Length: 287
Image (tube, rainbow, N blue to C red; front, side, top):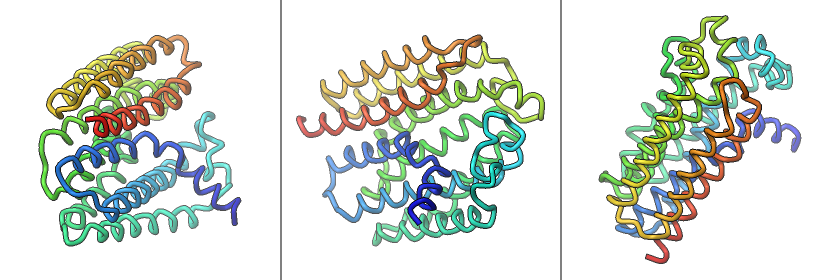
């Protein structure tokens, strides 16, 4: 049973929850500056994030299983390699969807989470099909993830202000940029079989430039969040370091050398995500 549980965690890349969950929690921390903290809100955010991401990742593995089987880089994934069955992953996807929708009931008597649950879930699942018809699929992914701080803020306060949208903008340009970098690994294969992405359409060199511009905009959004979100010197110091990390990320990945893409994608971006939450939380504490 433990081995099966580990297979599920590996299937959905549970460790990659670090990319989105800290932003939802940071949004919640900022929202709690103006409203009462409730344990049920925290539990609801955690459950919704885990179930939503699990559903999206499992669905992605389902619809991409034949593509993954033909790509040498992804042929070892669970479905192509026969480590899990299509029936098992389908059932897991459905249970995760039900779990996400059920988790929104935790926020009652606030009803916006329940009203928006199905549309949000459909948008999340839609990302898995995006590369079949648009080169902007990277920004579909970032748009899906950027909903997390907006949803968390709305679930807690039952209203919206500028702050969660600025945090969402940070995610949109940050995730879009690093997903373009990651997609450079498959540009030749995607072009060969007709899948759409910015690297397959424009080439890796131009794609990396687009990713760099996206991350420059990310830096601008971070400083806008610091200013308009009325955050202090701790957050300012933190986003200054994050800005340097984003620039460093581009210095280690080149169009003719993608050997360090995983370092940029997994380690640096995990540090950025968790680091932003930590400095934001600390800033609120000392403020």
